[in-house]
Length: 66
Image 1: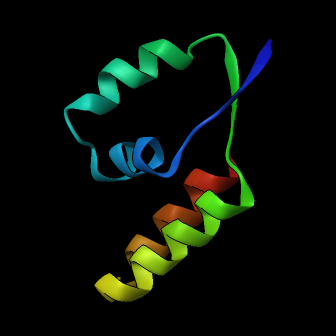
Image 2: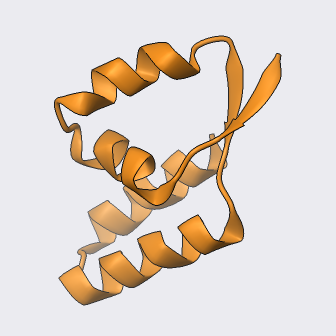
């Protein structure tokens, strides 16, 4: 399977269960999803700014480790 790099907004769609997540999910089928260190940093920054609770942080960790 080919690797595909996801940008911050795409990962955010998955985390928020945005309506576009379904479309992107079909686009990345049969690929190995990955993110850059910058995307990880942006996701963490967004979480800190939004003052996420522990549940949201856990969700991010699970998403990044998949």
